[in-house]
Image (cartoon, rainbow, N blue to C red):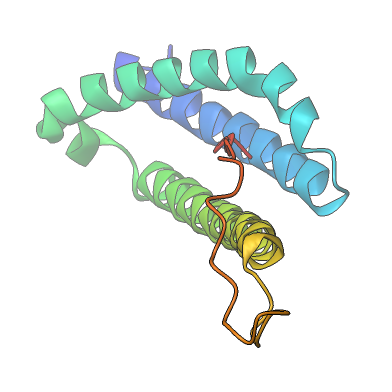
Length: 147
């Protein structure tokens, strides 16, 4: 007996969630080992897998009665695969948020230090008057928000 179209879609979804999870694991390893620039190399693959996942999920959700036709084991396998993928995406999001928080903290510290260097020392000058704040040289500050 040949597998049904729904069985094939479930197989595809399970395989895609596994591949996407592996890709997220790779990205997380790159982040943890300070290689965030290498993540860009995975973007094409991640985009393709995500599009395939979305297509398969949309097709499966289009007719919920087909899911009910699956065996209990197949439905459980799909649920487990999806739950593991969601857990992995949550972990990935937490890691990205941590890196973003750290990056923003560094940028804020650098900006504060730049302002502190421009601020005149408190006290009185040779004429017994407080020094006038200088306009200082305007500073341009650019931030790349990609981690």
